[in-house]
Length: 567
Image (cartoon, rainbow, N blue to C red; front, side):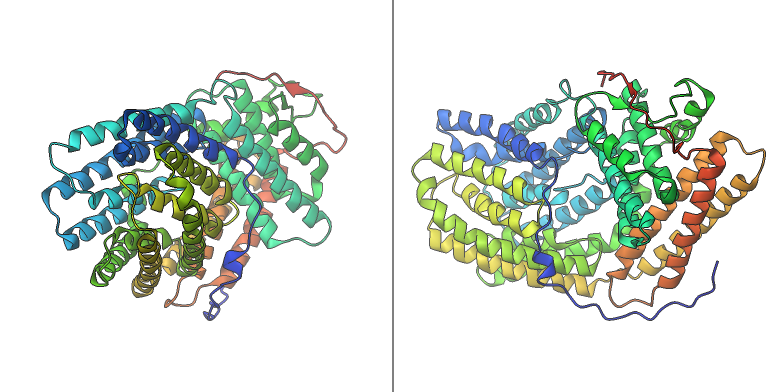
C-alpha cells in the first residue's frame, strides 16, 4: 500500500442549481405511484360513503405503507412490509397515547423529535429505502397534534392496522404475475451499467464515475438476489449467473462484449426466458457452471449482521435528527404556529449521509414546498366541491408525488405539499390563506434550523470509517491475490475471495463519498483511496482470469434457461 500523504481538505461549494437538476425517471416509477393509489382509495372512499371522512387520516397512515419495498424480492418484501406496518403502528401508538395524556406543545414537539430520530436510525440501519423514515415521521408527528382520548386510541389504531393490512396485500399483488420481477430489474440494471463501463474502458476513456456506478449496480443486484434466502429457483440461479457475468465485465472490460451484455439486459427486462450465459459447449450441470455460484451459496448461508451493530455508526445522524427536529418545532411554536409538526417534518426530511447532501435536500425541500403551496391554492376550489372531490384530489397528489419524485426530490415535493395541506382538511375546511402562510413559514423554519443543527453536529468519525474501509480492502485484496497465485486454490475459495473484494471496494467508495461531504474534519486520504481502488481492480481481474470466468470470444449463445415461475 502506498504511503501517500492525505490530501488537504478543500472547501466545497454548496450546490444550488445542481441540486434542482432533473434526472431520468425510474424504470418502475409507476409501481409505487399506482400502489399508493390502490392502497389509499378503497378505505378513503368507504369512509366517504359512511360520512366519516374525519377518520381518513388514520387509514391513510396504514395505506402509505404501500410505498415501501418495491425493489425487494417478494419473499423478502412480505417481511419488510410487515415490519413497516408494525413500525408505523408503533410510532402511531406512541403519538396517540401522548396526545391523549397532554396538550403541552413543547412536550409534543419533544416526543415527535425523539420518534423522528429513532425512525431515521432504524430505517437507515435496515436500509428500508425510499421513502425511508419521512412517511413514518409525518404520520407520528401529525397525529401528535390531533386531540385524542385514551378511549379513542384502540379504534384509531385498528383503522390504521386494517389499512396497513390492505397496503400489504397491494404490495404483494404482482407476485403471482411476475414472481421474479424485482430480481430481473436489478440484474438488468447491473448488466446495463457494466456494458456502459466496458464501452468506456475499451474506448480508452475509462471513467471512474462509470466504474463506481457499475460496481454499485452489481452490488445492489447481489443484495436483491440474496435477500431471498429461501432455496433458489432455476430462474434465480440463471439471474445470478448473469450478475456474475456483469461482475466479470467490471474486472476485465477489455475482454467483454458490451453488446452482449445489453442483449442480456433487454432479455431479462421482459417476461420471457432468462438467457444462458455459459459456453454452449459446456453442460449446465457441469463443474464449471456450478463453480460460478459456489460463493453465492456460501453468502446466502451467512446470517445478516445484528441490528445493534448497524446502529452505532448512525449515532451522529440520529443526534442531528433529534436536535434539528426539536429546535425547528420550538422555533415554530415561538412564532405562534398552530402546526409545528410541519417544521419538524421538514427538518427530519433534510438529513442525508453527509452535510453536502443535506444542504441539497434543504434546497430541494424549500423550492418544492414553495411551488407546492401555489398548486394547493389552485386546486383548493376543486377539492372543496365535496368529500369525494377532496379524496380524488388527494389521490391525484399521491400519484403525482410518486411519479415525479424519482426525477428530483423537489419535483415530488410539489405534489407532496398540497397532499399534506389537503389532509388537514379531512376533518373540515380551513382558511386557505392561513394554511399557505403557515406552511411557508414552517418550511423556512424547518429548513434553516434543521440545517443549522446539521452544522452543529458533525460526523467526526467519518475519517475513521474511511481508514477501516481501506484496511478491509487491503485485507480482501491480499487474500484474493494469494488465492489467485496459489495452484491448489479451490473454486469456492476463489469465488468467495473475489466476491468479498468486490463488496469491500463498493463499501470503500460509498464510505469515501459520504465522508467527503462532511465538514470540520481532518483531511481525508483521497490518494490512498484511489490507489487502493486501482490495486483492487487489478486483483479482481487476476482472480477472474484464474477462475476461468472470462467469456469465450467466439461464443454467441442465444440458448436460454426455461423460466421457473415459482416465487
